Length: 312
Image (cartoon, rainbow, N blue to C red; front, side):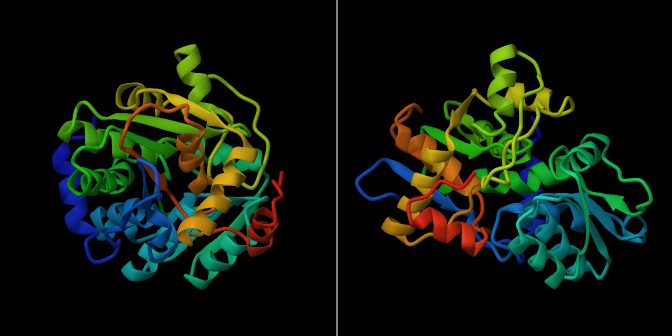
């Protein structure tokens, strides 16, 4: 696991950038919600991106920074790059929500839109032809994971008797970061990844005992799901996590509606995965914390979901 000292250093680096988000109880349940949608860029990604950029040397940043992201890491990196005074270039999949793309550009990031397969290849290879600059991997960079894991430090402090943490799974950087921090402080806590049915990467890997290719299809849960666990991430995932669960798009949409109706919180698709799993009753634990990872959702999609639809 990533050493605990790395999470403490990350917390110091990002203290004036990322906010300490609230932990809110879902009424009449033992389900708690860690509201990372309230971060300055609307998601947890500001933690890892800021930690990675602030830890880099001036020489490393001289050519700017590059990442591949469906939107949230892009915003986090663009925010941190603007603060550092360096350019940020973001490779995005062609189905990325326009809401997120507009925000990237408003933060000063340059967007390069490519087919989903080419975007995934960029993540696998940690590079994009013709682009120079420091590549900050959205998932398998330990500085990014350490920044993400500062959430775990806050959870243990705010809810000492927590039993289970549920984390949406995109590439594993969030779930591994949180689990690594939490388990070094509370070894008995179980941490599970939550996959959308549109790309159950972690669940398939745990079932097979190794990374396997799964069918992926675009959905409104654009921040999670993929074609498989990255090979470089599997050792981290296998060590840090206790397993994974899959939730349907219908369950995810229902959870998103419930968050809006009961606690007036707007989550994006990925941000509703963990609450959907907890509400299903399939996950263990008395005090269950759900990471609401972000709230960057296109308004047109949000309206459809609030009206009872499940967009595909």
